[in-house]
Image (cartoon, rainbow, N blue to C red; front, side, top):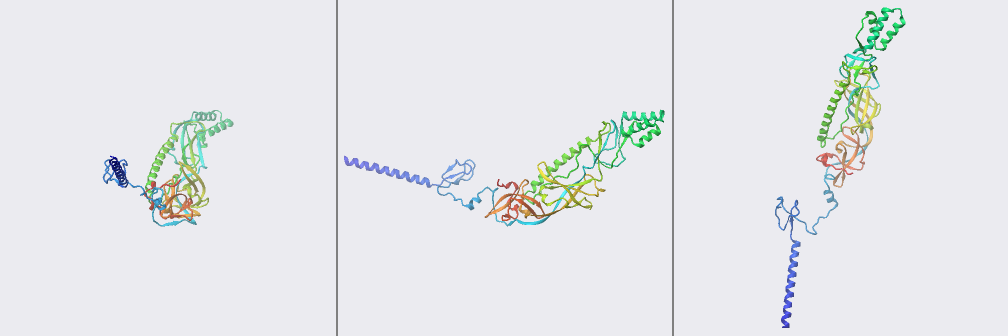
Amino acid sequence: MRSNWKNNIKVVLLLMLLFVAAACNKNDHADHADTYTCPMHPTVISDRPGACPVCGMDLVKKAKAGEEVEITEDLARLIKSPNETVVASIKTIKGEYKKVAVSLEAQGIVTYDTRNIYTIPARIGGRLEKVYIKYPFQSIRKGQKVAEIYSPELLTAQRELIFLLENDSQNETLIQSARERLRLLGATETQISNLAANKDIENTFTIYSPYDGYVVAENQQAPAAPAPQAQPNSGGTGMAMSSGSGQTSGSAMSNATSSTAAINENLIREGGYVSTGQTLFKIVNAFAMRVELNLPSASASAIKKGSEVTLDFGGGDQQKAAIDFIQPYFTQGQEFLTVRVYTHKTDKLHIGHLVKAIITGVSVEALWVPKEAVLDLGVDQVVFIRTKNAFKPKKVSIGARTDKEIEVKQGLSSTDEIAINAQYLVDSESFIKTPK
């Protein structure tokens, strides 16, 4: 009995050992078995290849323990976000410190000198029966009729002079006082002499211009050259800049139309009433015109007062002049320079005449790079600096430009290797992300 009991215990222990060994072999097989999952739906898991029941994509094999890829320095550059670094093999170049003579092209406009503005005031109050000035910048000559005014005060002054001439012709003192009153009310010597000779009272008096020039409205601004547009490099940014320019032009045309309508409304019209001392018209001197040019603010280092300017008015009419005044402007989020040039040959010019100009600038000593090496993103300009086998974008501050080169003010040193053509490294300007 006792031997049978011992034999039974041995059999039970043997079975338990076999069971544990089988379980361990099963777990080891499960650990080494391949597992497949869907890249889009991680909850889908299978022990064999196939298709995802949710989206239909092929299942991919999951990595097992110990199969992770070692991230080396070269691999780290490869797996960075593509808008932070680019792996490429293209030619590179280094910036060069040198002196470059800069010539700038600019668009401008003929405008008037605001220091030479005259006014034609109303000497008396009354109603304008006729107005001969119809539109802004209308040319006017000295002695030309500008308006006819009806005024009860003028009628009274005329009757007073005629009464004295007819009833007290020997009283020179009163007669001279009556004549002087008419002069103060705006009557000319010719009008007073005709009144004394003909004894014929005029219901309206003509107002004449005492100046030569052009008529401007009361609240009218002098014509100004358009703000300079950003200068994109060839390729890449062309479409974006073209779209932006179109919106700017359309907005400018709309503003110009509404501005012209407002100016025309500000001109005095027939039937309007004026008070004593009110300005009827503003006259700008026809011989005090100037040319205004607008340049990007980055050109400040390349120009100075006295720099030579070649003005092209079209039709083969070109003139030499010099910069008289440089003023920085900041408007609508854009910074630029306004350059004033005075010219003495004004007989063929008119206000609003468009002008092309070439400014012979000074020699600028700075770090210069090829124009194609700088990518213009509209707001920022970047270059691609080489780091081993990759290129990393870096924001730079640019200055003067020539036909082939650009001045780099900040963000680059002469030891940095940069891509000779930045356009090869991008598909669009939104591709680039510069470090903060």
